[in-house]
Length: 139
Ligand code: SF4
View 1 (tube, rainbow, N blue to C red):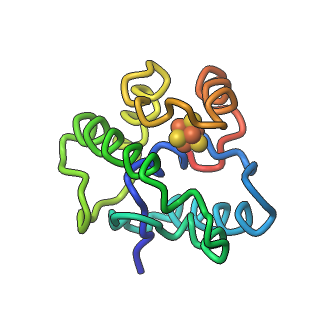
View 2: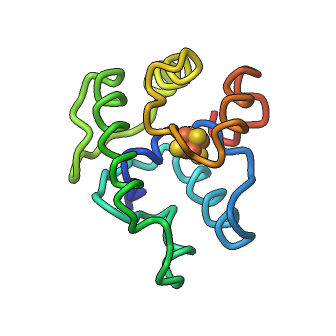
């Protein structure tokens, strides 16, 4: 099994502390971060992914919007630069200690956060990274 993630969700998993859009969303995201913590490999996908899944019954889900796809483009470029690997549909890799360290450090330095512009969770995610990722589920 792989965890299917769209590129900007590589950022969102860093600061996930159990808060989200709905109880179904957070239950699913908690399960996904546990799978990542257990070493499960990621497969990058284009468009809605395993994290989006609980929202997709709603035809108006923001997951389909072009603004969200733009977040993916920005995240794939910046995360790819930090991880020194292509981040595009079909890419498969794990988030080991080295990769997590690089992502956390560069996220905290605002080097890979172009995708976060305009996101409603921006203040929360900034405070989590500023606190040294206190409470983050994925370590
Ligand atoms: S600010 Fe939004 S896009 Fe950025 S990591 Fe947080 S939830 Fe994800």
